[in-house]
View 1 (cartoon, helix red, strand yellow):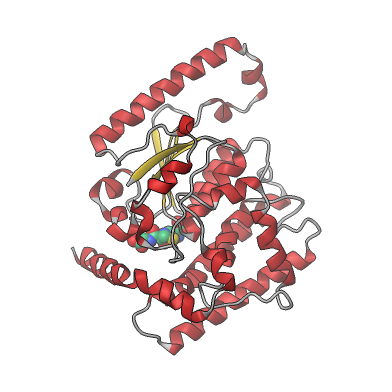
View 2: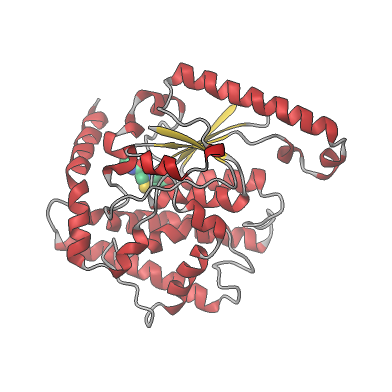
Length: 342
Ligand SMILES: N[C@@H](CCC(=O)N[C@@H](CS)C(=O)NCC(=O)O)C(=O)O
């Protein structure tokens, strides 16, 4: 696994092949490393074992603490008087992720918020998300994305489930409500609806996006999830048609848009061609999100996002790209079945 510290001005991407987001090239980080400006190439290397990892987290935390102490002594009390208490502590965010629709939700949000974070690229092809260090210290559910941070009490906090991570990040760090609304407002709850609806999109579109990996085509499964995913796209199309801002909720891009975007971007991979005539607002929204520098940068973490490339590819080409990943996905499913019996 590779760890990369990304600042709000950093950029990490990998010019990988056309294989889907589960392809095996996560481990081939050389071109990715070349693209990171030299000054930002801090903390790149194999993932440390838990003890070493804790030591390295501690070193980073104490470095940040000493910087923050220097900072706070020279800025007098103005910040303390103006900011809510939680916003005063410095972020020490470690994101455990892979190039998937769930993974990029978090990096897109982090980039939108301009927060510094260290990326730990988890190699799903090697089942790193099921290794003991990951299950014990990062996410007991063995999935990406997951995130750790230094909590307001000074000790480490771990977050998993993309919705929970996003909620944590906006509530703690989006004090200016750049991509959220104040708690208790009508828009706050409406955003919540869409973030949770993404749970539904994630379940159905998610199953749909894994269908290209299936060793055999079962028509019932394809119809079931393709129809449901198409229906979800229609729900979003209708919502966007009513919107005056071009975003799902209110007058700005919010975590609602960020949560849902990856599932729509993966539509072609899932076998659904989003036709401009049928989904004019949804297609325009996909481009609108890409046009945002933060979202666009975040979608390429930990390597290049390739899902939009499939919008112009044939079914055969998509099938060939999926073929590369079929073997290890079958292997990973067997491993999951084995673990569920232990
Ligand atoms: N509901 C979870 C889903 C997480 C999830 O399924 N992640 C996938 C990648 S998108 C994963 O880690 N797959 C590897 C595995 O299942 O072992 C979330 O929103 O974070």
